[in-house]
Image 1: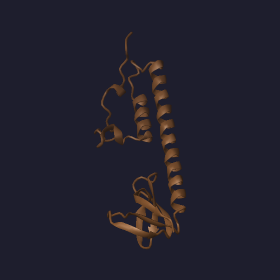
Image 2 (image 1 turned 90 degrees about the horizontal axis):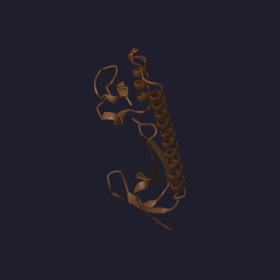
Image 3 (image 1 turned 180 degrees about the vertical axis):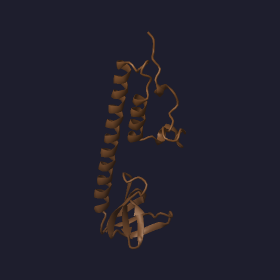
Image 4 (image 1 turned 120 degrees about the vertical axis):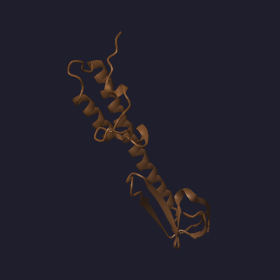
Length: 146
């Protein structure tokens, strides 16, 4: 059985600048991938188009990638909610943990906050506040009962 080669068989290049992405394929998100796929479809050789089976396979892959991306977003949101609930239950309790500079923090939790990453708005860190010190929820080492 013969196989029709497509542009996806070649190294992926940035369509606008003609260069490879700096981090390779790991830097390509769903939107960039869809743009690249649409560009490939628009620019395919009309005398040697991609066959229907191959096109359906690529569409299936796109659906799978989109579903995985949505699942990861949902799970990330769920994890943040769980961390926030856990941190909220610490208000008024004494904890031991490490701050951002890895310095020991001991004291009662006065409040809880969620820090949103400026570069990736989907990345969130739940933090507990002990006076003026901030401890990431993942760096809480002990909860001391009063």
